Length: 373
Ligand code: PHB
Image (cartoon, rainbow, N blue to C red; front, side):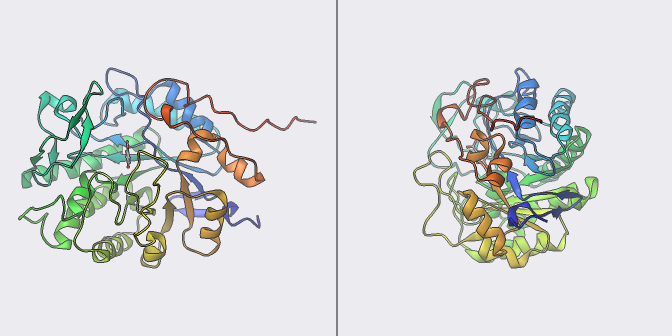
């Protein structure tokens, strides 16, 4: 067994990883149009980043047309999308890797130009996020005031998440990650700043956590809890998130997730901003991994600004079982191998993160391959 704590095996629900360097979910806005369909270029990108026994998590993927909030983001609700993802999962499995599909509904982080029939985006309450968003044609406009979902509509959203989980398995994914983080729909329900409901889905912590937990239960029932992960962003401020309950909310949610025996919990260190490299972590917020690791018995994945050395230390001290890397995995397709041998990392180019083709997507170099004797 390796002396390097990052290269020891780890059971994550139904899969057995051989190392602990996980690719974080990353929006790249390169699905084929029309139809938001994953295609060959996406398969090449994920295939390049696969490694034997390693886990990749896909970019956030729409569970329905209503879930859509950024142009060119893929879905997992049409047969063409499911078929498109099949090429991605085949490319990853061909290298002995594993891949989970991150499934989301963006809630109020959308614009009517991207919604079915040009309707308003939906949310727990009719409260817009502050600031601006993009339209379907990449114009910058202030957030619209969303329409508050009726109670009866929430059962459909739960069913849509569960169906997306089934679709993901049909596409060959090893499991799904339910996106409960970063100010998207499930997080909008969790937090008091965006949830002012007076039904069973608002008010108390238990009520605000209900939608997320119903989604987890419904997906688990359809595909097995050992194929379901959840991502949370405790105290994160991205997308105008605020909350009055501090740690209590997260303690409740994580304790409930623990009871359900899901494959993993994926926690992002508090980040106020995903759009720059200059203020990456929220310096005043508590350390999420240290705060919550003890409450969850399944695999615990930590993300947010790690470098190889800080990742190794976090796993060595038991703060997390595995570490998810985002930006370094964009610019280093062979990141696990580079970390293993201590090779220099290629810097990322933020200007090619979103949209476009091969440039900044599939053209980052790998280490020279050893020549066979
Ligand atoms: C983004 O597209 O900026 C984005 C998407 C999903 C996240 C965070 C940021 O969880």
